[in-house]
Length: 213
Length: 213
Length: 213
Image 1 (cartoon, rainbow over the protein chains, first blue to last red):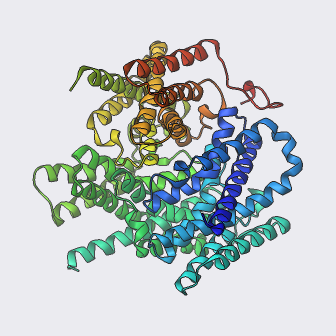
Image 2: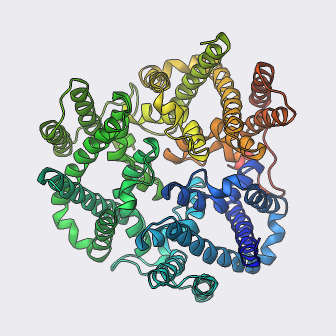
């Protein structure tokens, strides 16, 4: 296996782990859950976006379902959240950083998969964003929250930006590690700036402010 | 492209636009959302039913996901709801009419697609109804409402009637524009009568009335 | 059709009926629904798990959607719940028993289908559990409850145990009616013991007790 592919796989597994850990911790804070619920919600956060992607791209069975490494890493993230949830609050900053890494990677790999399968740029952008935010959306629905991605913060927008960069570069004939890493890094930076300065996406005119949510 | 097909495509795009606009406005009224949330919920309302249909019929990737015109029209409906939501309350009646047009069209085209792919009449009726009401159901789940289609009003029933007419006519050997338009028109009329006179589907005996919901 | 297969089909239809009846009654107790909502939620409870299974296994269209007998039995369960819901409270114990039968059967047949299609043991266990609990989870999301399977009681765990027994036996070269019936019976017994003695799955340390939910 060439080194570049191995590096991408390792990064993808890191993102999957971060999504599962962060997803399970978010669920844990929001509602009372037993061990089955916590691990399930961690796995759904980590693997749900890729599953919706593969349904839309007619690429079933879902890639992350077939590959046991994704299942194992996602389950491990959920189990760690279950067994040491309260202790992890101290490393919350680090988990947020890893989650932003996962966000960029998932958006980029989702868009690339759509393009590789012959879909157009609009489809690649949509699928990239869904890969990145779909799992967290499913989790929020299951724990009965309006998905945070729909209401506030910069979460979907950096994913949309990264997927758009990939789609535009592809249309211009540019592909390869520079575009992949650059787009994922751009998503990461926008996301972290949003977290740091508490930036929100635009609200409709006349709507109440975010404090109201 | 023959004229009849073009007419059907135009009607289908009109229905898609109406579903996106109405879906985004409904979401906007129910909860606080940013621009990403409003456009996403409009698109899900417009395209979600057809996506579930295509999963059940093993006809992936979903037709409305592949065709950029559906994506563009659905996104436009969501963006218009975002940018001029409050002003649209004045034309609410017109939006309801277009939505009822979409309901009939989606039920009929969903049932026809099932029959074309060789499914039986029961499957055609179910899929026709899901095509018509599935997107709104997904939206309601995401904004944390019990889907209105499950609780009150005549929304699923006209869709079921239209899909049943198509399936029965097909079993009797009748197909073509008369059946298609007739079934969609029947759905439209039942829906508008339901809106006008506030008719509900039957409740179980002893259940509290609709005001209680 | 050989007798063993017929017996399995009959049991599977009994499980489907019990899931639809129990699912519709649960929905009826939790929120106000009209006839469309009750029958729909009964059918989703009965058929939803198998549908998710068939998406994950790339075995579309879903088997229970194609076979009208499953649709008819599920619709009948929902209609009976609608027409005689309050009277059924007296036979609630019997319905719970049938539901536990369905839980074991769905977990076992789901796991077997994954193995038959060449998936590994981890996938078989996950898919078996999803087949058993997926429909009830979808129902709970639609009626706006945090899925009970995620929060308390022994529901997912007996399904996971049964699917694991099937996967381990298969890896050890053992297949056939003894394993199938044994695994389903084990699931049934664990489930009924859980109901009888009100056993919960483990909660995270420091979490509030179940009364708090």
